[in-house]
Amino acid sequence: MSVQSLESVARAMIAPGKGILAADESTGTIEKRFKSINVENTEENRRAYRDLLFSAKGIGQYIGGAILYDETLRQKSADGTPFPELLARQGVIPGIKVDTGAKEMALCPGETVTEGLDGLAKRCAEYVKLGARFAKWRAVITIGAGIPSQACITANAHALARYAAMCQAAGLVPIVEPEVLMDGEHTIERCEEVTEWTLRDQFSALASQRVALERMVLKPSMVVAGASCKQQASVSEVAERTLKVLRRTVPAAVPGIAFLSGGQSDELATAHLDAMNKLGGAAWTLSFSYGRALQAAVLKAWKGSPANVSAAQRAFTHRARMNGLACTGRYSADLERQALAA
Ligand code: 13P
Image (cartoon, rainbow, N blue to C red):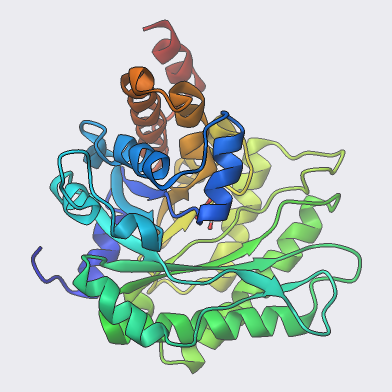
């Protein structure tokens, strides 16, 4: 793999019409996904599933980067090709999740702080040798009665900024992911307020830690009503409120914003991204870094059977193409029906 500058890697991850596949589920998280389709959580099943995703034909047309878990970065395709090499051949940049999870935060009931800074510089150096070109760290902000607290927002923003600095020093592009969870009954107005607060403090922390904004990708949640809120917002309201908050908080030096799906349905996640790109006028590329919204249909089609691999790959390519179109505001729900009919 040629040595590229961090800025060009960041731009390539979210090149026009492309986004990021989040396939970095930890062994515990993939167990939940496998349980839903009755597949045993063995190392070989995890390998076979990721092989299916990474070897889908032509995926590099819509996917610029894929985030892997430690185990996956070290695994190989059925023909013995290491996954980072397989991805690179497909035109997909390999990345790695480096946080060690969101843990209960002391003195802050109901809140978490993401861990993983200890030894991180050393781990980053190894990941670069294994072929990773970017990294991911996810912080979780929960909305509820009396939360989030300033303590939680500050601690998570600081950890994300320290992680981002270490990545840039090691030669990895950091994906900075402060997720405001959709869980809860809160209104969209409350989500907007908390997202603005989170991102404002995040960019202040990034500046304090000397992180070069040109060499990172932001992975935020969208501004939506809580999943249990009776009043759900329209696609256009989500798009407008999300863009408003981003304009207020994200400097134009950031090359791109790749949203997480966070539990939104596949088609809604695509429609929201498309609506933002149709509005246009954003300073940064607006793309996707979806986990569930890219994989739900794939898992359902696969069900752990080798006989279903082609159908599962078709489901993956379809979702990736829909999201690729949303990156340039060229998606429409009709395209979903047409694909079903084909
Ligand atoms: P979801 O799109 O399922 O939220 O996953 C994205 C991700 O990488 C979370 O860290």
